Length: 293
Image (cartoon, rainbow, N blue to C red; front, side, top):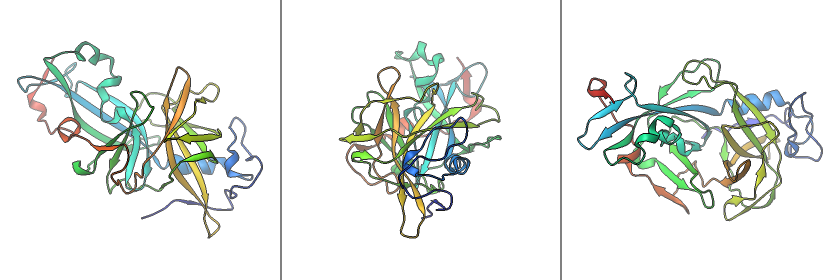
């Protein structure tokens, strides 16, 4: 499997000192001094994707409904990160209706239910090129994070994901990693633009049973996603960026990081359960049968 390595000339291996930052950026102390922040941003952005999840409503008679004359009822956009053979992200990937205000009137209905109809992925960039994300249903997992309230970390397994980040078993005290917070420069993911602003912070993290203590957001940052990355010094003098956890909102403006369980191998482990394919598999619906509700 390919791995993404950062040159020692670009990132100095976890020595003491403060990373030399460009104006307006944050410190990444775990990377040491002499770090090229533009290079780091490009490296991480190239490992992030925008996921476009669309859904329909279906009634008890098996009829499908869109909204406003469209072949979908609604959609949601999420940021995910490549790791091993999968994408790691948030609950909204498989449940786009939860973030859609149009669904509120039907959320408690016994006559209608939502149905995921399309899952597409695009690289982050100035021009979004969404393509269907194909996966084996037997390889999909949903992990209910311990202590994460209703937040769910979703792991999708697909050999076409080509993840460059490796997996790090984030457990124990005072891990020397950093947070990368992804904030959209605008919310125009539905058309062509998908540029993200990446902000870095270096909290001292201690994991207890897979979940960290409360963290503060960097000043002025309202992130769409947050990932905890641990740099690992390699014998060949390179630094490997390892995926260790995902941030989730907790208690107003506070966040926590939940550890990730081996997304590369998708091994059946603590807290990982198979997803019911009837509820999350994108449905192959003939657009001609979709009615407007």
